[in-house]
Image (tube, rainbow, N blue to C red):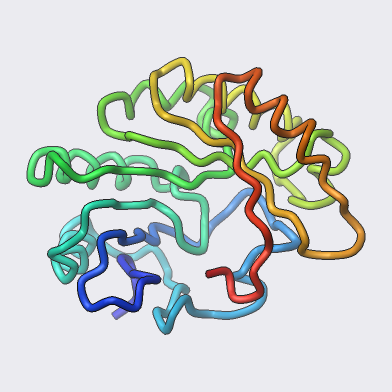
Amino acid sequence: MYTLVYSIDNQKNPETVYVNLTNACTNSCTFCLRSQKDDVCGAEMWHDDNYTLDDIISQFKKFPSAKNVVFCGYGEPFLKKDMMKAFCEYLRKNYPDIKIRVNTNGHANAIYKTNIIKEFEGLLDEASVSLNSDTATEYNEICNPKIENAYEEVKKFIKACTDSGIRTTASVVTGFDNKHNINTTECEKIAKSLGANFRNREFITNGY
């Protein structure tokens, strides 16, 4: 069975679990773990999206101590927006105290050509959005986006999240090569100007 819900915690009863909705993505980031390995802590990440909500729920129930759910994995979660929303609604109904976060590339509003964050108000507690640079040129070099004006769209998405009252963090990854020296000071200024927190994620070879 392919992996839809997994943990990176070696404890028997992890408090945080991750939901691997899809392998599709509108970025091809140079630092992305999926280009290096097929699994995360032994959980096979590649699948064909041929699953149901019940499949997610079944795998989720294997982690009864979960207090945090993070939409992450080897693709962009919002590309499976309706499935993501359905599982959020299931969690809110059945596990109201669970905190829900999405890790996203911030392209969703550009893809759907509408502010989809409105659909997730009251469902998402937190969003971590990959800003990855302080300039569009460098962003394109690092992320190889498949959509036009991707960097500006990411910033718009961050603002849409903060405007909706979702606790939002704009993140960058540093130290993944010798070519890019990310200006974290400017990135943090951009994050703050959009109402978001800032996080510098130093590159780890295995991703965890």
